Length: 206
Image 1 (tube, rainbow, N blue to C red):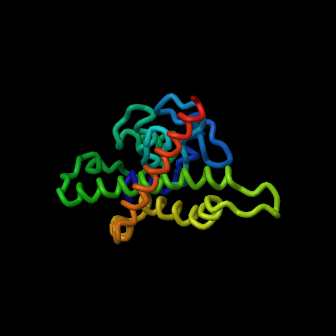
Image 2: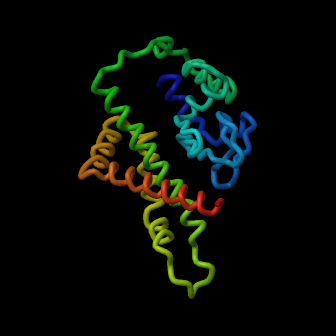
């Protein structure tokens, strides 16, 4: 097992964040250390982090690399040392960069795009679930609240897989999301909703 695999298997993102003195709330949110964050906008899942404010994302090694200005290998070594993980022999070959294949590079760009859209949708759904929840049992249900209840778990599951699953499974998810223009349609809808919100905010401020 490589040092990277050993670290990722034994240390989850929230534990690392708390170890390095970030305040993580019960919802797994914290203030993003990578930009000036007025309110907690970074989501910490077991296997990955994502900031709804600046878009920073990655696994526990990426998190520590950004936090301390290290490369991936140095970050993995720091985590292993700080959490008392002692690999039998450090895999020096792992530090060598692997050549990028054009097709793989194009796929990765598409994967990042899918993850960005899913996370933006996830953020929207979390807001809808909170803001449009019925005040009492007799209230009629708002469509946005219903959509949030139906879609939240599934969208979070897909985002988790795009970060943590094996390459073969991630490729299948990206293919599924692009089939019949699903991700493009969602991207367009999110963009439209954002413009409507911005217009509404301008009207309120006027």
